[in-house]
Image (tube, rainbow, N blue to C red; front, side, top):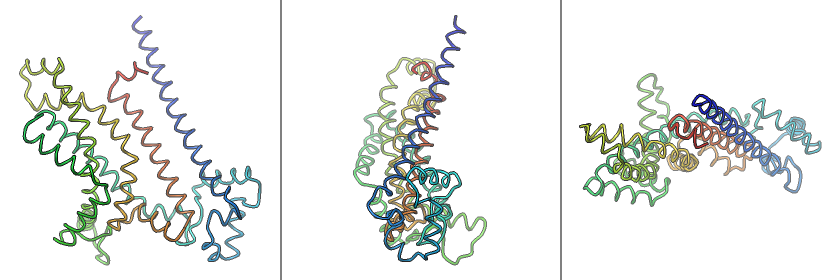
Length: 337
């Protein structure tokens, strides 16, 4: 009987995973469809709607003819959509008239810097918020708890770019501890360990900005969960067995609070990505935020669409991975599904 129940639960879990994957695929296809149809539903020439007036002036007749043929812009919308999907599967997101290169190659030049910044910010902000939340919740009402709660609630009232501007003024302009912008020292020709230190030196301020702002929600959630968990029976049992405080904090209470932290990290991922884009502009960091800002300034529509499409795909993929991760973090979700 128990084996039948276990088999049924496993089947339910597999079906839930497949449904999650299908839902995300459908969502991505809808986004692809909107990304295709919205520019082409604008009045006027499709090439003008996609690339803009400035681009058409700068284009040569040969390039215009090539783009019309590549995306089948002289054919019905159905054939254009098929050509658009084929181009995407080949990694063709269009041609940037400002950078005079394929959009994919332009984006790939900026993408690693954004992945480095946002990836480290996600990990460090989650860990920082979780550890501070565990410590504050365990010491509820004490001095450390009040100090952390007051400070982080104050920081939470400011957007990422404003905190970034403050850090830039203090640490770079006033104290001169960090560079004003960029990701590398120009013309330094550094290699090896010196190059890594230079990258970290330029990365420090934008990373600190994102970690300080984005750890607040994780901190508040973890603290609230800890306060509730510390009154549970298994915590009293652990203390009665003589477990040390640090084991009670992290192995018992902290582990029980981990699932909402993972959930919160997934929910705030979109805000982290948008915050990263703004912070990159503040610090002139050569990531997708700076690329998107420059593309908006020069109205390079193919680059704008390509960046937004890649960011959307990244958000969907990471959210799907988080959904699947929930089952590993808390097996009880298997039965809930």
